[in-house]
Image (cartoon, rainbow, N blue to C red; front, side, top):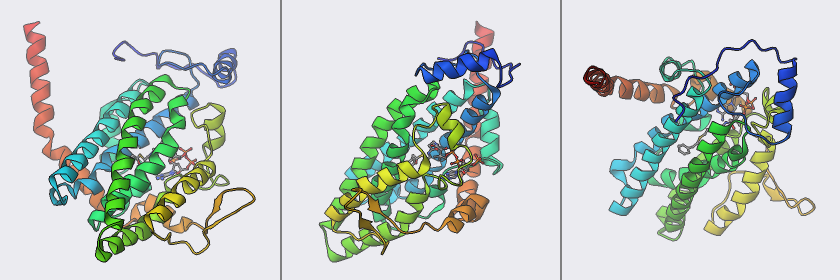
Length: 322
Ligand code: FAQ
């Protein structure tokens, strides 16, 4: 789709008539397309965010992939297989969107496999029981939707368009997760305890998914001026808590937060302090599963070498035939 040559040569300063026109387009809600002029910093911010997002989708296949062979029924297995496959697809759309900014997929792969690239903190936690699969769908996909619906209106066209399909699929993922939780919570005492234990372990890491508090977020101000982000990290986290707490109460579950309470005046659920030291430790590579996840990605990449070689050999043969 984006195979035409891209203008990635930049002579740009962010203070120029071009920069003024660019900001005017953004303020006017027009989309920026790959060959439009853009400030270097806008391009770099998008490459950073889109590639981190793509890596997150790809690494995000691993915690749930663990449970495909252990799904409790054929129906559950088929749904989980489809979900994990969707996540691989989301990674591919997002890598394609990043490529429109002039970065190569090989470089992005290399950054992930060498451990230099970031991916979402949430995927460094283990999946210990089947209820974790329900909780990931309900909470992790729920948080992803809250963050990604506004990205459908991102100023950069290819990212915004990719997010439309991603969000539709995430919505199915969230429903299948909530339905697993509903089944467990209406089941035996042991099943309900399993659901509660999963919520206890995943709740706080899910709140961290939205990123550091606004006071510490380095990129939010600029990204909002450029309409890459439409809401701050704290605003989206609050929207997620407000939407999710009633869903948990409907399941008959308790949130692992003694400070959680509904503020009648504002209508918002107030929540306790997030352990940002844990978040920083996970980002520094010291979460419960960071090493395991990277090892699994490296192994998958090495195991797939024959596919890449076969594709290259086939392409070379096609070129000779043409
Ligand atoms: N984990 O200045 P900010 C999914 C980093 S997809 C790791 O606030 P920004 C689907 C941030 O990169 C989940 N790092 O940054 C699925 C920056 O570091 P840098 C992924 C984090 O970009 C479901 C630094 O902290 N979603 O779940 C995290 O304005 C189920 C300062 O932060 C996306 O990527 C974090 N949680 O806002 C798949 C959505 N948070 O680059 C499988 C798109 C922050 O300076 C199963 N991304 N950092 O070294 C975004 O919306 C934004 O990039 C934020 C961060 C909101 C994540």
